[in-house]
Length: 626
Image 1 (cartoon, rainbow, N blue to C red):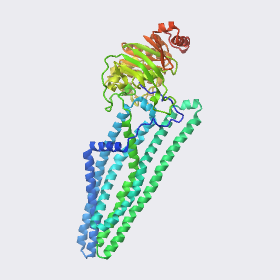
Image 2 (image 1 turned 135 degrees about the vertical axis):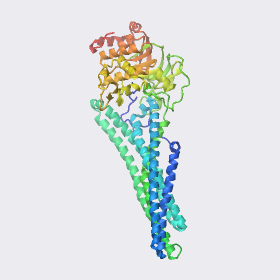
Image 3 (image 1 turned 120 degrees about the horizontal axis):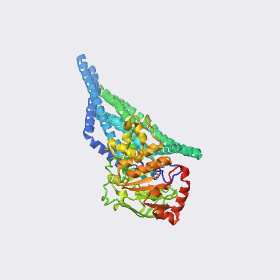
Image 4 (image 1 turned 90 degrees about the horizontal axis):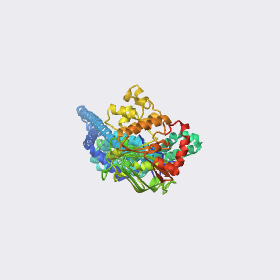
């Protein structure tokens, strides 16, 4: 069962603009990062402590080497040199073990944290209203859930431990030089000259990587839309237009990537120079001081070695600087999903077995199953997308309708009359611009997902089969359903083919397993409706992909299962209207006729014309006459 729909008001170059998903600001991103650290604060503190101990152990080598030089110059014996060398070896082993364990703790911290990021992203994505996803485009959502989350994962798993180790080493090495001699320490601080270049880079890099991520999302959206509609593109001869749009998207990606490459080409050479100058300065200043007897040769050598060692942690930090910036932008995009509208309605209702923890509770529970539509106006985009020609233009105009509990209502009308739009409002997927849609006197769009799933389910002609077993696909609607209930749901919608599968309910569906055709996939969607067990079902051309005779059989079987429930059917096959308790006729976004089939036929209005036209062609389609 799905509630997927095509995006209203498609453009020729469907790149996210004003409708793109939000991006978290720097302050929100920092708060989110701190929350993640606090959730595993003990491991993070242990990682910092181990890194500090490893850095401290690493300081012994150069200092002891300087002691060896001074001992040899003073005529000390071999035994003293050997003893100092053994201490250097012990400190080196200790540093190796501490650093290795620090990385082990850091990697475990990173894996646990990125698991939380992935789970939170999935929760937020599932809590997004369908209308938000449709306006933003699946490309942006896909890019954030794949490349952006992967970038954050790499940073947490690899960059954070490495940078923590390197930062601790750099601070301890600079401190050691200052302790040896304050003047030499001032020379060593020359390495901080690279900070100005780094600051120049950081001021520009965050926005540059955000632009690169947005361009990547736009390209992914365009390619996904083109691939999904490849046959339509070919049939309508739109290859050149889509190729031109793709070239523009690729050019955007090229420009953004070239800009970030330029930033790196300025940063890295400047920092390489900043490594060398402090060592040269210490050797010159130390030589002058030593010549005047102000410092020992061993101290000069130790200071030079400290500064030479400083290049390794700084190189590590700069190596990860690009990753930190790109992942910072990626994390801002991932975290930005939490700033998107999080309404308490899922898009498809029965496909969310667990309500999002971020959804606010419903203000009240419906008192009954009656659905009221009062003076409803609706415009795609609700006026927030100026790029769309449909912006500020109502597609529903003052619709009033009451659906009684247990009623079978048929919504009919010509294409583009607003039937599917009204169905989405009845299902709580969209909210009206003006007016109200309530169930039991409570606005449908304000219901908590767990409550909404027990109220209304929308089934469209679009469908989706998830990778996994047949049982997995069915239990999306009812996680605790037993096999008997699953078989009963399949039987209720006429899915006899399921009994012939080699492994029954355990048969894998999709790539590498059984590939359901269009009619089988739609029967799976209808079986989910049976398992979801709502009091109201909205069928929007739900049997459109079935052949007429199978569709009629499936509808009859489903009607038997849904007896006593409210059924709102949106269809062009008017036998559905013939069987309904009442028929509502939509024309140009208005409800023009409402009554029983017989009464509307006698009235000789719009419905009578539709009925006469369909009935005259119905037998040629092979469908059963009503």
